[in-house]
Length: 229
Image (cartoon, rainbow, N blue to C red; front, side):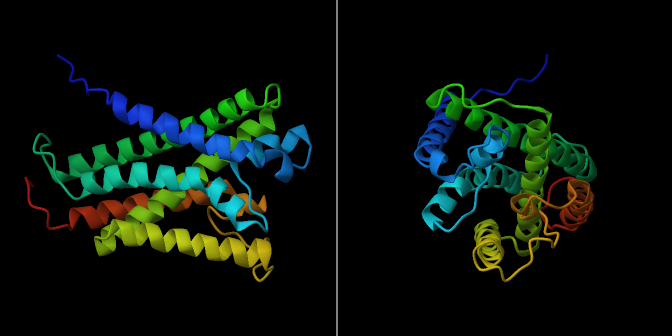
């Protein structure tokens, strides 16, 4: 008999409410930040960084939300051991595959739901084309990278919250330095941040993620967490 996980309806309802609230906040500013071109509206809805730091934080809220949801769940998994697994190598492989798939699906669902809800608030505002779909895919990958680097540092120092705060502050500083103060060239390739610059090769980000997976696996196998070997 196949094992089925119990669906947490309360958690799903909370997630939906969070996304709706974020979209409502975005709706109030979407016309102010939009260039007026339909071809860039998808990007404007998902990412934005300008001179108004309140608006910047509102647009960053979905990223913070996905970071907390995914990293909290898998940091716990990587700091424990499922005794139903035969050994830690098998367990870490299972967790990492689940980590990648769930991160991809959750972030993609979060993006698409924002587009759907914004389009509900502002009817007939979206006309998604192939370039938009490519951008959405790039955005998913860059966000997965951000979660991976947070998890990597969290595993090294065994402090998830410190890692989250550190990387959020670091990315805020880089974005302010480059987008607001022009202290950092937007031509420089910086994973995750480059999606705001509209530059960079997301294939490089994928390669970095793969390297991060190998490092996380090595760190985990050297963890003193007990359990079966």
